[in-house]
Image 1 (cartoon, rainbow, N blue to C red):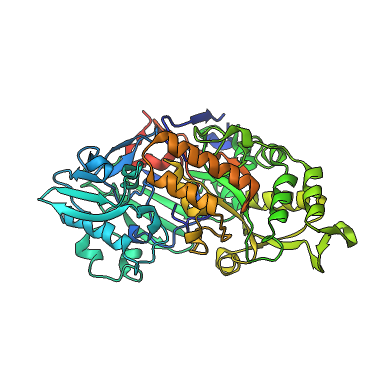
Image 2: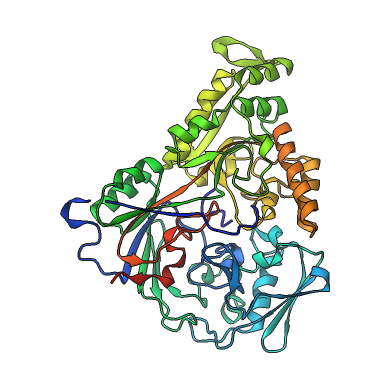
Length: 528
């Protein structure tokens, strides 16, 4: 999706590659620039900076901290808590002890009441947080004494600790406002390493170092996220020196290969590109059409030609390197199979090679977000493959404001993917209870076998039971595809080479704003 959707198996190591660049005219990108200030070009901005509405829910918020955080290898580590939680009652209670002396950026101390307020507000049905289902396991959250918070779960939930990277907000400010409309959404106060200095919607967000940060004052004193939707414009501004770094598609990142003073970072990801196939649409609602499209698509060609090799074919929502991936669901393009499926279902070839059934043409519209060249190329390739099977796909660009009300009937070239545990991404993508809930289950997919697998995977603590559930889920998606999964993409970033120790994490779909080499910008050190 976009950062509108403020979004996997356990990962033991981040896949990180830093590829050194080589020589730019005029002495390179870093000449004459301070290492204390950074300007980054990103493709989009959040709708809100409030964790109560979903911002930063997967970690890496620079304004806030969670009870826990993730390191470069995605391993959980203490943040606002002093240690990982104490787990009791056969996995039904999680107790956290808060770090002493932590203050919000307005000088007020962090207390257990702030943690309780944050979680209770997110769980309140009146709060417009479309990620609420991710905390479904919580029965109660309460303070215990002056420094402890206890979560009681409805059922044992194996990956629960990973949910507590959720940023904590100050009750003394946010508690006095409507969480949906209050000023906290654009003027946040947190415990994080940076404070928001300014936000010009559609243009840029500026952050300044928090000198009282409990983890130590950052060396990078200011950083700006310049919001530049168009990939080509972002590359141009990076090349001119207007930006210190940017996220770029593979073809544009490659143009910086020989630039002195810049480095290219390749982050592996769970981020996939897919086509939603709305069940309310007369054409895409037909399972045979969905099966034919799955067979007709040439995933390998998309990786080679669109991603320039910076990615892998997507045979489902989990990438092929994921330990939960079912390897025998891999499948190649098979146009003959696609045609046989459509013939059997009564879709007969008509004028111009386009099929029809009972007077209905096999035709639908595929939307993609304006300015996103990678999605545009995926959409056009998909339409080309579909036409070979006799399905007419009209590709159309639009802003997300236009896409959102249309996505219940029109297909969308979407992006999703979460790290940490398969439950984190698959439940919101596929469970029928979330059909039409914002950007959750966009195509309104409804498959009882998939629902059962998701529920089993969420509620069981037995790794073998969970593995069997997610294996079943992946096979059901092949038989009854609610999406056409296309590719898992690498995230490419180009950045001026003025800082030491930069890495990338294995990334979810959400990237650029919270991910990239700047995921831990508070720890950067200037090069000597």
